[in-house]
Length: 334
Image: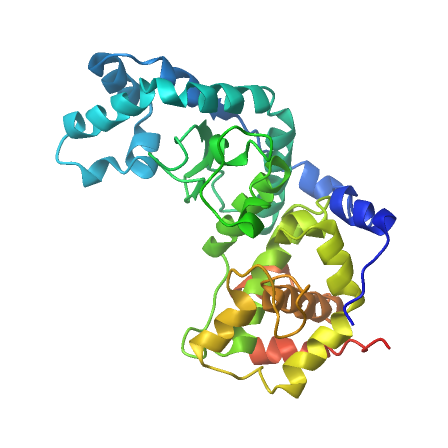
């Protein structure tokens, strides 16, 4: 039986802040980082001529090169036409207005980013803080929901307006639940973790993939220590309460079915890929359970090895060693 928890627990996991480790240490707080979020949707949708759009590209060369992929066009004039068509498309007025209203004040996101970047720069002193921009994409007409590179981070705000938006991204309901404002910065940090997360791609077992994904979630956990687990992995509070309560049963499934060293991509995807549920374990179990278990293995490993730093963990490609030294073996509750 897959147990359901009380609504009080749900609310605590959904919206609560982690009490342990939430205070930022002085050595991290003192790291010099100053984040500014530049709202590019405003000047972009104010442009109503080719000359004004050309000026927009000229003023924002990094955004044009990285996010708009200017080098894919033989000339700026070929890029300007579709951009101007988007900027002057009156059918997008509602989307633009709702995005601007929903994100009128982004001080919360700015503070989250500033704290996360302080942690990253503390662990990786050579880290260069990327420029942060926002944009309204027309739900993918131009650009993506999130873009992260070594020099630029872009939020496609129209994806994250939330469930009350007039228009929503074309995605399954279980994915739409993650397109919420409070999950936007954690999702960006998960993408950014790819810059540091090393993996051995010659040994692609389910266990190695689980631990690699677990390292990514652990990275977000460490640079955003005040963020609830549910917002980091994108589970509802109820789902998170359930998987924590049934952790022993979930782990027993992987052991009893001899799945840890499975190399079949189809089977691996059942436990790591995007799915509304994991019916192999329980019809009510959420998808991506392998990633959540990998996160718990990495947590157990780091708890047992406090001398291991975050950079050392992220650089470690020996998934088997991490698993062995984690001593991960949750008890199965009756």
